[in-house]
Length: 442
Ligand code: UGA
Image (tube, rainbow, N blue to C red; front, side, top):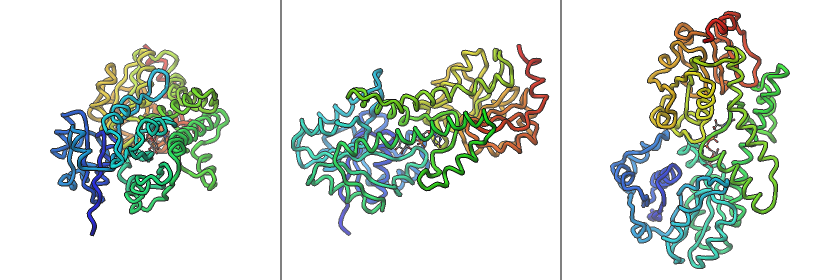
């Protein structure tokens, strides 16, 4: 069997490590260039620096043909195909910060022996601007569609692989060769369209979420159940069932950043992208609606009320806290004078640094002990399995706000809880829960 071409990866963040490890699993020698020496050291020992299901196993298995280095020269010498996986965080203006991409572009030179394959999410026009300066260096836009928590699975079984390259550029064909064994539909297109496919896909998914969240809010007013509505809508093939789970807003390192970046990109060209303004605003307000629900049950004064947050990461199966709804929610609760406790199965350490006023507990029952209310912030599957009778006995007031609609309302009501989901009729609110509230007000 012919030897597989070596792959270069620049940046050992989440996208870079998934890309590197999965290509290694497909049999490619992989060289990863990372500027932080500590990361290079631990990765060289086979130690992963983040939580992503299945990735540690693949790293351990393929470490013998993976090299981690701080030296760009080594990468240039050993590889032709170099995936750029550095971060492009938002700036104060909402534009993407391209300084790390810029540094890489300067470092890689301008030789047609090498191809820069852009995985980092960049504004439309970035590829063209790089091509204008680097006439020989081959350039491909190959945007990333992996989801945190299922990234390995997503890499190995892509819905589609988008490859944007100039006509006739050798690198477009080379990237197609790399991805063909994975079987997803290959979309060959120009560079600008590939860049736009990425931003438009994330913005569309975020729009879908804000849409169903608004439907949920209307359901609460008119007595419908958004989970039923989403089920009925999702069976229409044109709509589809995915990304119709109402909740307390989307977070993470991608949706908030990319929606703003697309809005900003349009604005920079003089176009006012009205729909995205609404998507962003709905998402912000959605996180705050929990406060109103707590007040409905506990009274307007939340001072010294103990609120237990179940889950802190922006979604399950990750310890990523970027733009997590828990950040806004805990700050709002602190602003109301509430005392906040929390439990998260994997994000506790990262969250500790970001939530200084929150008491982070080692197990859910400790967080819930003496609490006036529990709020499900992240839909970790273990919350479904909690012994809710024990939880009821441990809490001061049997009140659950299910911010992700993952708990079984009937089970909780049978156990004596007042239960509030998002866009679902409030289930069996027992009188004691209301009665207990004013008495407990301090
Ligand atoms: C997202 C995209 O789904 C990926 O395709 C893309 O590659 C990635 O951004 C990126 O640009 O790098 P990710 O941020 O990992 O992936 O997370 P998602 O699973 O998409 O969830 C994002 C947020 O939306 C989470 O806070 C989640 O709780 C929320 N969400 C998702 C909902 O509130 N409702 C839903 O129905 C689905």
